[in-house]
Length: 601
Image (cartoon, rainbow, N blue to C red; front, side):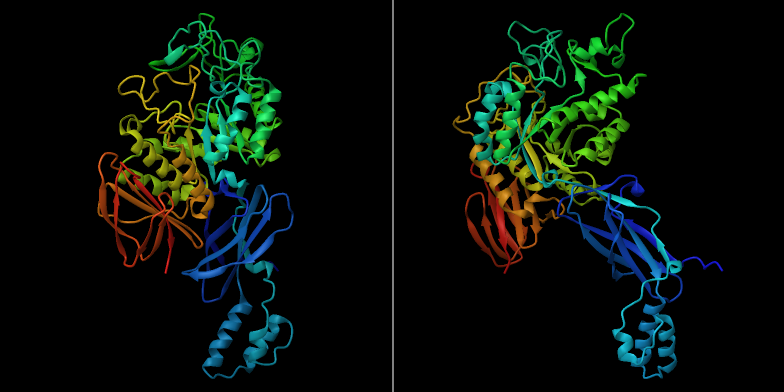
């Protein structure tokens, strides 16, 4: 006889992304807290368990779920290996649990329990002598016919901790004399406290249509060109620009950086100069115009004559995909485990899902940062497809309301399950007007906000700590005499550098677990719109940040936060706040921010 269908209902399993189409993200050592609504018709008791396993294992591990309220159940599991985990939920109506529950009610009401004990004995398959024995009896395994599993297997991608907590420092190797010069500057980067050293493309640079200084259409003799115009007679995406050194020099840099707990991140830009070997060996990978020339990159009215984009709709797309994936694999083979991907939103989504899945199946330790300053849905799609981190709109969020709204979105919205923000106050392409006109206070304010509001942040240096702020022309976000097109001679010891402040900020981040993740971010009311206040907490470690957003004038106000003893980790001040509201005053001419460590009474 066929058993009746299971009566249990399983709804609203979370976390899940797009109904389980994409995995959620965690890093090694984190918990995955699973929530679900489980119920059944009638009055029978319901039991629920969480099932999880590492993807390559066959046996499921089981965790009883805890009932919270209104048919809502919770349980968690810890991810301890890189790669993928799977999880689902199982529920069932439980006649034995129902019997124990009702037996207790009858006992409390003073009713005769003899028949009920016989019923319990039948359920258990062994005799139950009395009430105390019944209460001490463990629940039997559920009958398969009564249980039901959630209809989907959900997944978690587990990445290194640096996917959640990283401090990026970008520099151009050619401005330091190549890879050997960068090795010499590693102590400086280490002293500043950064754990990722990001290098723009290190490949040979084309000469055809090479751009001159300040993005001039025609290069003059001696102009070095843009590193993003990749490919020349010396090779393409798997070659080293000989002006930077040799492959051995590059590998030595990766090794020396690793010894200082710094990982080298490499820029991968899937585009070519007209001189790239691909243009001759694989003309089918490019779009050809009626006049027999290749279509160069354009974003009207801007023209990039020194760059040929790939034609992803070519009939030879399979060979193109294979070759591009092999570029990542080549550099992984030479010790690179972090990639900043240039303009991924201009390449097919299906390519990225296939490529990242292929890479991470063999190398789950690899981290991908998406440089996608584009529309929100596209940025989020790339994150779902596998990018570990993403650039954000932080650069253009400067007022209190827009900062509060954006910080809340990236830390509290359900998208945090897959989208990890990386805050950059500047890049070689972006010099925001706040930095152009705000002077030293603006650079300090933006650094404090980036380093404390986000667990992942970065700066383009040494331009940032030396406060380079002259635009190419009024209204432009491009640097005058941009390092993208010329070699700079940086004086790292220049007077007025905010390097000591950057060093202090990174030290605070490294010493306080509260700043090493995003999800605990909470804003606190201040009766002055020029003051913004937020906190983060990890167990007993609590950090409160208060920033004066007015880069010209002192501001003061009362913050709803307290009581407690607060120690300013930036200035060293210490204050005892005895009430729920406390006074704050900050001047841009001194330190326009507090980063307090909080000791609660």
